[in-house]
Image (cartoon, rainbow, N blue to C red; front, side):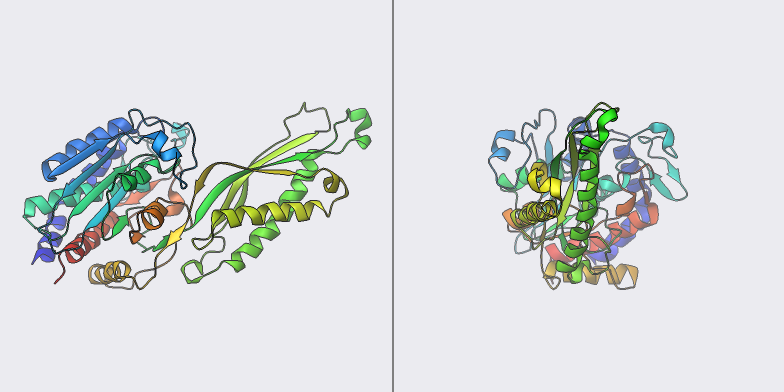
Length: 420
């Protein structure tokens, strides 16, 4: 039986999966800078096990014409996508396993428990930048391609592995794959969900709010109006909007998250000489929004709220703050929890783990909407690694979770692509 063979193979070759993840972590691939070397490794790894391997650099001019792509001036020279295809015999459902090769910057090296590019094993976990987000998923996909070929398991439906660039920045890699026609009957994006099954992810967009004051020398500070103080007051008002939006958009997928549509100010600057009442203050932040919410509606709600809050203040009433929307915007999307993709993945989780899976939304922006909204493909997020550890100096993935995730996915791929 193919599923039994797959489980035995993973038990016998789990150390190869670990070594593969370590090798991926050891190749720095910071987004917009260094994905090329890591993608060359992915291509070399896939070629012996795939009948077709496609390597191309996304076309930024094509992407910038698409309504879902908000970055401008981002180039993809030396930053290729890699897609490997294992064709089925026919009469089966096709499947995409998607993972992104790019990672965020590693930060100060001395703060890491081991070097960010070492892939060192500490207390049963593989540490390093990208270990969880999302090279654990990528390593699993590459490992499964090798396993299917070495075991001679012939799937009925096509299995495609999408190793994409740019997920952390604008999503151009996955969008380019969709626009190039790489579609399937189902998609699993191997993001670090801690092996929870996530049939949807929220959207997120960045903004800037400029607040005007009246500058003054400290000797006459009483005649000035501090733009910084007005901005801080506005920021406190925005806490109420965040609270309202949690209840307004709370659905079953997000019922366990205290904050799932965040409204966060990540940067605030008065941009003035320190010994002066500041006449301008700039706040920049992120507005999260629900998968069922359109980004235009979310923008309108923030703009209207800022306008209403300003009317409560004598100065701001006459000097309205300016709201602008910056380049980063990744939409949200979701599929029904009773979709066969979700049901089948949950069934295989039960078989391997022996307990009920957690089915919930993913509280961050991902590439899922490109496949769901624009590729019209049912898509879920599923993979080893804990979301809260990603982008941190503690980023790591437990080896036990890596192996367990591979077993669940192996069974699922066989059942999805070769239905009884």
